[in-house]
Length: 323
Length: 278
Image 1 (tube, each protein chain N blue to C red):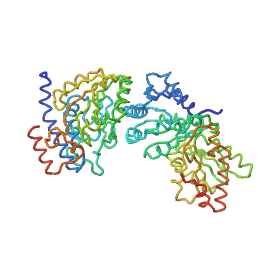
Image 2 (image 1 turned 60 degrees about the vertical axis):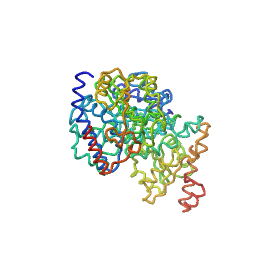
Image 3 (image 1 turned 135 degrees about the vertical axis):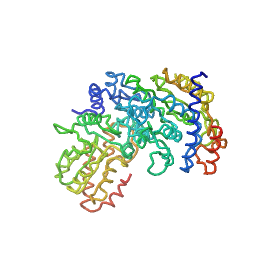
């Protein structure tokens, strides 16, 4: 059943609130959108509505954490990332146990347009030394990630979708922080995908299978710390690693993979958003940015053509995929 | 002033003098730092540490301790001085201020030094942290109080007013803010940079209890204000009129001494003055 990861988050939070009274939730006038409302209705004394003042929300969350609470502070991902200075000092430098929850990630939100789309948050959050960065791919993984976050020690960022995403997690799924999930094996190329587009990558693999290409799909729910060993292994096993994400081309999963694999000699290519977003349906935007199944399949074909034809640098330059 | 207060003033007077001396010595040894805003808050921090705060020496993580958040993080030398005087740090360690490997970071770091309740230094953030702690205290039955030292310049920051508004809404009864109104910031007089007045009216309009301390460098006045606010009924804003660089005549009211270390010769003169008038 397709479901937005923000919905799974809200359900998990309301459930976990019953068993752990250290959990507190902070909101900046988006509880109905981030789905913290169910928690607010059940545990009003542990819910803090701070109005449209995210910088203060982040700081108050840090204060609550330093006093022993487990705060989840939720807003649109772009509005949290916009309070980087508070996150940097009040949360990260303090090693405060704050869980920042950024919903409405990427161009997938659609009609609201760029000002509500977060395309830079992963770059910012990854840059902080002790920040855990999670981006689950579906509802099951989100619920498991939220459960994990209750017991995690240290600051964390959880990136969620506005839109429904397909179920991709295997039956009997267990979330293991810092480890990739191999959703499909393949020998021709490996796709490392994260978040909303994991389902699209699986669909792309189906398309490519019909052409005789066997593409492995690796779900990277933990962007930091990155499971570099697994990415190197899958890159080496298939000879090419394509990263796919609904985030700007700079600083997200693609950058993380390049940083980790830069000395391995494994060809890595980043497939992500190259410009500001805009209004339109989420589907139309995914098609425009090549992040739907057809677009991802096309990126795989181009990459394989370049790798196998050893024409990588010229092709890459012509396509301008440098961010 | 009551007889009890007069007695406390007599007890605290030599302590505040030693705190000033520590500030001058450690900043001179570091070769950089912020003497002006450390000296203006000397009485406030002395009263907090040696009269007001419920704390246990040697136990920085005692759950029921009162919290002190120094939002004006550049003024941290006065906190280090108080910790040394309270026996939490060896006095000799003050000389390591700002040096590589020291627990005494240029701006407070709670991980390096556990008596620091929160890292600050990016101005405007401390009140939000203090509010979070005060809300946590209330959830836990108001077991401790939260005191926050705010700089006057940082009230130019929007986040301070976000936190002020949220405090006015949630009314954490155990939150006390002391505003060190020393009238001078890095680039010049606050009135010229960005005049925050009318300050008392602003805080009142955000639903705070406001008490003005006419002379925030007068121990008796600081004691009486903190005694009242410390009993509850917060959020409290104590607007303490102070003098930047207080106690060192050539630093008093001078913006040039916001963030400059005295030379050895200047430090000697400063120490002589503090000893004479202290």
